[in-house]
Length: 311
Ligand code: UDP
Ligand code: MG
Image (cartoon, rainbow, N blue to C red):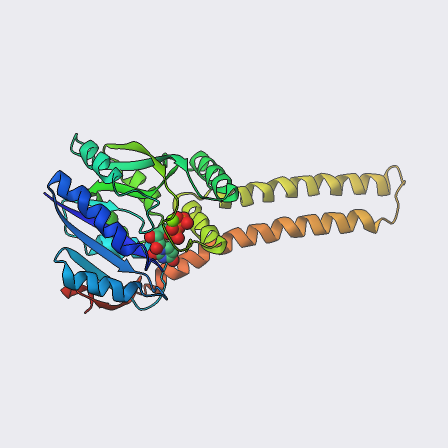
């Protein structure tokens, strides 16, 4: 039995070595064979040098250096692609996902679960805004899709090889791994844990990255926003039609009318707004289709100690 650990790295210079030690202690205790697949997602700090040095010292360390920052989900996807273990763990590099929880994940998974994800009982050191937006986003997302994405979970989990193989066959460029993994099915369960504060450094997830990620989550699994655009289109055309009848009635039957531009302006602006929203929603889907059609590589590897990763 060999375990692969996929670790995305974006400016984590102070966290790499302590995390390596903590993870290694866990695998030593469980007496398990392991490999670490570090994916350096275009860090601007010393992360790259530290990884290369770590790999020189330890046989079980593999690294992939991207040519620039491609984003967390793509970094994890690349790590999954080049991992070779029978079970695969995804974990953040900043200590927020405590490596000691890997033991619980592993012990649960050998009871016969293809996926065991780590569910957050408590989240330390994260802003109220982040917690609230995450909470509502996942609750709404689950209302509009046809399967459940577990609440209060990130990508911290252990998966069997067969799940990862399925995942790697999904060609979409806008990855929303936690949703894709739920979608795959099989036996999935969870263990709870307390999410820690980041050991050092600061979050690489800006609000704009979070919004993009949220839109990827929605558009990957639901066409509901497109349907809302259509339904509101029908609704407002119907109201418009009633207004036409009413206008004709007051002009020709009761002959009581005001030359009212106010009502016209209001209607125009309102309908215009609805139309723009509709176009915007369509645009979100079309731009994703466009990127999928372009079929560019998901990421570019600068160098790696995995032979087939850098060619
Ligand atoms: N990360 C990455 N690329 C990015 C942003 C983040 O590989 O563009 C990595 C980061 O190094 C960490 C994990 O993804 O290992 C989670 O990121 P972070 O801790 O910044 O996010 P948060 O925990 O604040 O949501
Ligand atoms: Mg973090």
